[in-house]
Length: 284
Image (tube, rainbow, N blue to C red; front, side, top):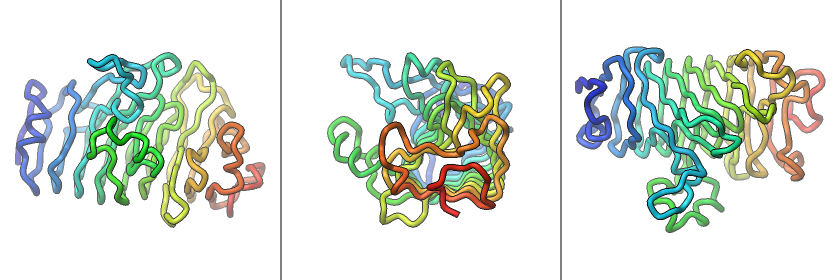
């Protein structure tokens, strides 16, 4: 086991770890932008309230060349390896004010067989990205994003007993992800509207985001009826909501088709048991 304290460089710890090792983080704040490239690691904290990895990049921030970061470079932590397990810690992007700064990713996952338990993910717009990217963006960002952020391979992820919070599209991507017994919390936003999930799955994918026995809650001050469970980021986005509990902040319609698109004709959104008043295109 590798024991780590907040004064150590977490990026160097991840780079030097070997497959199969466990990294134990002591309580405290680890303010550093880090990526994981070694597979088979287990990263454990001392509890989501006491062990935090933080950074504050945002989409409209300019890099050293004067180029905007773009959504997919704003992560606090990027998992770019397979078979990573994370437990009992928080990952935070605390840039805030997305209405001015744009997207602010806390965790990006491009690895397969990723598991997370008893963790907290906190940001505003676009908190959790589940790779891979949609195919059109893999092509568009060739030469802009490094190859490890353009991985063109299916990725599966599992989140258990986690708290994930944000404002707009704060769980998004093309991953095949299960959320079991999680709390999905909407935070206050100056725009007074929000969306929990924004799936972008390709039509050939038959697995998408599954929310099972999850609670959709809201921070105090979120307007009742102002939040949608999901909207399709791409035409065939796939979301299943199974035995979930929704607070009064969730719109009675449940789902949004994404602006003036026709994605209501192709989106694959399911809710069971059925809820009266939902949009007519949700599937049963």
